[in-house]
Image 1 (cartoon, rainbow, N blue to C red):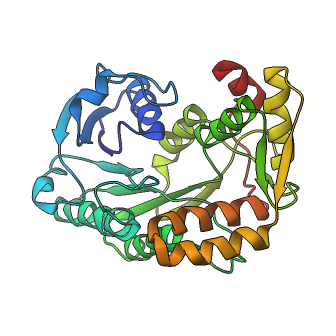
Image 2 (image 1 turned 90 degrees about the vertical axis):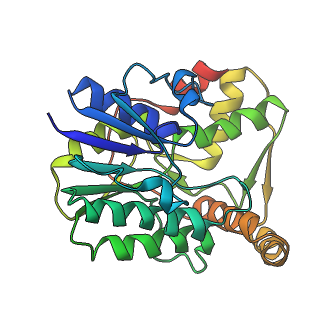
Image 3 (image 1 turned 90 degrees about the horizontal axis):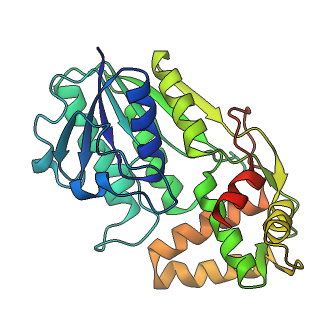
Length: 289
């Protein structure tokens, strides 16, 4: 039986990965900061996983002393750890780069066979990717030179992110950056988890993946209003205006600048990858409506 250390087990994707690993007969070792979260549903109705985990290790990837020997007797390491919300003054560099690097060093020390890292899909023509993507790219650069085999997964976007469209639609108006004609094929956590576990057989690979349908951002907004049975009200904010705001934010809050820069890039460029899975946007909007 293969043993997998899951870092980020209580996050949106991590919960589905634990479920899929259990379904396929893996031994699961969860690295978590708050073990009690394993027995609660996630923020986006993602599943409770307390009974699916075989071992629980309490640790924090930003604190190397809490990771000693965490990878002992482990075949694979899976990490979807990263930050999108400001937390305890930590930066993207602290978590997405240095934190994952701390975990990789433990994997190297314990001679782990493979390290799977969940990156994000980013186009090469993004002029200013921002500190979020830059931190992830720095880690990926190190991972690719490690003596541990790597598997890098680059999803287009999570369905959990689309809940913001429903929240705005409930309030009566959806705000889009740019003309709304850029498209993406987001992927549900359950589908992405199946893709990740299936891809554990890969060696030194980078895999792009998206969901089974491609929609423009305007179509996503329209779907939210349609599911709610409400008249659509969509406001387009010029991308140039938001870019100017991001430059001010860069001085005020590096973290918020990174998040804003990421969404500017995503909503003004096509973000599409090979299709996988079965879950579609309308189905999920109905589920959370």
